[in-house]
Image (cartoon, rainbow, N blue to C red; front, side, top):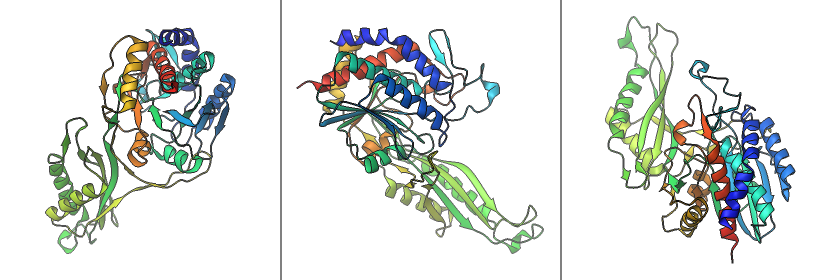
Length: 398
């Protein structure tokens, strides 16, 4: 059966490629995914899914089967902006084929995963692979802005409760089983404004926040490390200030911090470390805040969440990792590399918050995510689709 599945995936390669090009041609930045979502919904309906709809947050959700055992495949359908267009050799949304690859913004991160998922759905229907399962295919929104928000909504409001979620973010066709978490913080200090001609009369908030920034720089080198996930990190990424004028001492300043959390680190430990850095800088009164995501979805819904995204790891000896490895070798003919992402995914909500097991396999190499001249090998689309369908076949066995 595994080779039959691979042959079916090859049979559908042109359809996988066509659909990927269709959705790459539709710009779909975070909170602006309406048009691409409608395109994906139409494709799900043409495949003949048992259910297909767009939820109130804007996620596109399709389902095959009516079984009690639930598994899900996820791809986020938003992308980052193209950035400096002079760095691109072509229009980022003029999807085209060259050198065996599909080129364009989102081909790696991560519309290729969406295309391969829906090809897997075709194979599952053709070969009747998902007996006694309910298989969900989710095209999720706002991930680039707030990873996991979409799945917080799906789990809490749609009440879909899978026993396994396969994340189709790019892995270069490797099997991934976790990644570091992250959080976004701001550190704020107050000063006292005065005329810039006599700065000694005031209290310069920029000087104060600068000393804290230098302590944050020192903190980075002492953060915890893990043999699998690697080292935690912290970085000042933005600086803001207020003041009466350019000729006045600033009366407030704040830092934006990007904190990556390795295994064993959490919200409480990270806050305590930043507080200690402020004390060492001489400003124990500094205010530290975890930010709240407040953006409005294209549907008009605001679904607030704290910008804390927990670390997660699925154990190597997990039955799902072992089944994925077995399916990979039987379908694709080689032993998989089992590793981790360097960036964050929707797994922060699914596995990190809700403790639902996740594994990952996706077409494309993550090093090209968010980069100009993004491209995904067509061969990856086919192999990923075959893996997804074969995993369903394996999980459906009694």
